[in-house]
Amino acid sequence: MKSNLFKRGFLSLVMTQFFGAMNDNILKAVLIFMVINGAWVGVLGESGSSIVTCCFTVPFILLSGFAGQVSDRYSKRTVTWWVKSVEIPIALIAGYGFYVQNLWVTMLALIALTCQSAFFGPAKYGMIAELVDESDLSRANGSINMLTNLSVIIGTLIAGMVSDVYCPLPYRSPPAPVDSSEPAGPYSLAFQAANMAEGEDKVDALKEIGFSTAHVKELDTPQADASVAVIVATYDKSASSSNDDGISQYQKDKLELARKNPFGNPSLPVIALVFVAVLGWLASLLLTPLPRGNPELKFEYNPFSTYIETIKEMSKTRLLMVMMAWGYFYLLAGIALLIVPEYTDIMDTTRKNASVLMGVLGIAIGLGCAVAGLISGHKIKPRLIPLGALGLIIFFFLLAFVTPPQVGMQATSLDVLFSSVALFIFCAGFSSGFYIVPLQALLQSLSPEGERGRFLGTANGVSFMFLTLSSLVVMLLANAFKGMEYKMFYVCSGLMLVGAIYFLWVFRGTGLLIGKSGSGSVMETGGVTAGGVAADTGVDETLSEDADATICLAENSVQSDAARDSPGDDRADADDDAENPLPGNSDGSSTS
Image 1 (tube, helix red, strand yellow):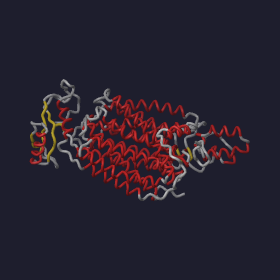
Image 2: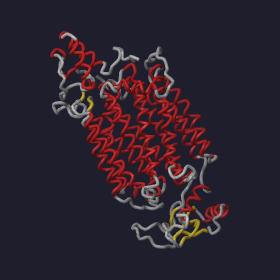
Image 3: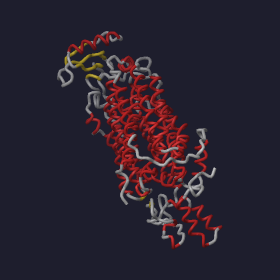
Image 4: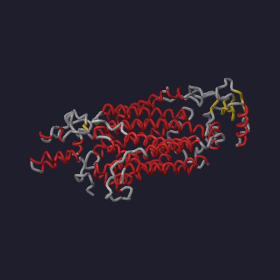
């Protein structure tokens, strides 16, 4: 059968998701950089990045369940078009907030953008199963995850560059020494200028905001884009030497320069956000027509009742644990994503260089997802999950154990790219692809067709609950790891170890990870009858290499049906359960 992966419908979905993920990432990343060491540093306290992440995740929790119902009732194409249309005015509001340097307007826009993304999530994931054959689910998920992470890479790089232009950071001259025996001084905080006239203008601007000793100095080795240095202030004491309040004058001046932002370009964020939003809207117009859904479906407006009802249905099978294992990854990913922007201070480098690390993470996850999809082919291979978990345990540990180098503000992206930090981040990201692709394919394959949007919306909401929990974990750990945020990767490694042991224990004997006969490493995603053998041989409850492992999720109900029905009905009952592995009506609708 010819694959649908290269047809207009799926390609349009991929591009719509591509630009949507890029815009989400640009807005969130620029905001995080600004509260860490930019124009809004200190406004949200020590854990500003965690608060921004909470604003990003909580709307998903409150809306994903209802959004799943919307995607079940209406055409997923229509839902997608509406949410992408709303993204453009939201981008304008966010850009205005940056332009007038108003944190609260920008935060409001972030919440609004998250709300529209919450409605796109269930429609997007449900649409994959409508646009491609079931046998292509693993490859489709691998492809869309790979390209989504490519968009995250581009978005993070754009966010880093936008942040550096919107609120430039001064550099230390001379750079901090590589070893820990830092000399007492002297050293300076400085900006670069293309020529003497520009340098004098910057000196005047600095004097207006209180830096009376600012002056211009010609560079010993002029660069292509700079010939003079604008010296903000000079220090004799070590940068780590603290005053009575525990903060050195060097650090105070850096924070003051960030808050007053004398040399920023306020228009760049709005240009970037609106441009990407328009591209996403144009991509959504190319989606092919899709089924209307279930117009008789009645909405449940309680944000948690849908979760509770769906989780109750999931709890009757192993699907609940599949969802929890998938969501648990987002707890670890959330902590990691809050640590990486801190490398601007940890490695004393620019936000653009810190975004290179985010880009490395995105590339690694994308490659891991793509390789996992290729290995899976037309099957789902859950045995990749513990392999991915092992990689995460090892490389999270190494990220905390090995001290990052201080490369300096004038370091190139290559200096960061070839650091030990980038290597360990790449390996951890690649491992995560092996962990999430089989779980995501299982969620899509095993969700009832008539209510796939509700089930996936619930799974999406649960993943964002874990992301919110990650923000709370970082808030609690922030003071303990202040100045050594990378040590929080010890927490990630430990949590992954505990989670891997728990989920391996829960899935024992189900055939999901290790079959009953030790061979259940493969799940067919189409064309195999219940029981793992030809229909005319009856029901075989053992999961073999070629079995459809979806039946293992419902094998308890198969056994109970077989016990109370006549022997002549065994085959029909098994076939029915294979087609509808979750409890419910034969058409996949809810029994509630």
